[in-house]
Length: 479
Image (cartoon, rainbow, N blue to C red; front, top):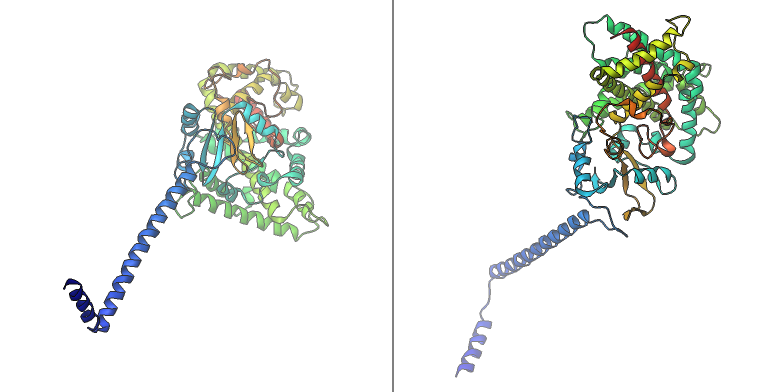
């Protein structure tokens, strides 16, 4: 009987009509169930993809062995730690802690880009010596935004060499001997005399003003007393946010930096348009020479390259030297024995003159042996540039590790300059450590205060002249 009852039951069930509402409910419930399953599947797939992405971020692909280190949080990387301020003359905590943990080469991520950081003198030297072959100049996108897409640091090959030759017309030794030495001496005398009449002086601000007025006049004929626009204030705003987290919203240091750049570029563009419209204008400053290059039948420069060049030169010509000299004044104040030795050297120079108040001559400048040692020691401790960036053009094997093609590599001068295995008691201000050593005219494995390789700083000689003339006038005329 049981099969018959089941069959009858089925027959009866099949003949009972269902209402449209029931059909609709069943359909909706089925669709909801399917959507739920799909959503769960999509969520699971998204979680798996996220886990895979995070894993790939923290474990980048490499044909060889990557240096040890951490890539930090996805996208942000270790940017926050990198930009953290360092209030001392010692090695930054970012580099110090990682060198201690991983060794002299480590990987990291800064503003979304993978970077290998080198505190190894041999690796640094290898990077500089192979620029244009295995490496090229490179800076993270945020730095490029700050200095301009066509700034001299982002240019390569012939155009870079061409610009370097152009700049050496101004900063080369011939012009230093003929013009700039006397002008820096006069600027130092005038500034120190003005400071002496004041009850209190902010040395950093005073030095920045002195050097900016001098270099801006040579570069663009700028004279603050005759201009309605305070160009230095724009650069000051720019500098305050230069080493800051790249968040470009009002109220942040980076936004202030970008606004300072925008205003300074507006001034420079106005000058360029005015000069381009005056074909009869004579060459009075470096900007005029740049304008002449732009007027050539087939110019190698573009207006954008020219403007970015002037912007970078204005910045580099005054801020780095002002920072180094400010630290130098502090170090001299704390080391009277060094001041005594400087005073002895410079008073001997004054005694040998027919006119004690005469300007410094090139022969006198070159005779300042101990002063040169003091300058080397100041810039070694100042470490104005915390990192010099390059990019690998192909996979590069260095000391058992691989720097993948496209990765950045940051050479870290402070890690070398403050290495106790290279410099005894590295944080001590000891100019005598340079005694009887040959003059350094380029970057070396153990000294990179002015860079190295093809991009050794073209303003190195001007910086040394500025520092020497300031020290000469300071120790011979003031306490």
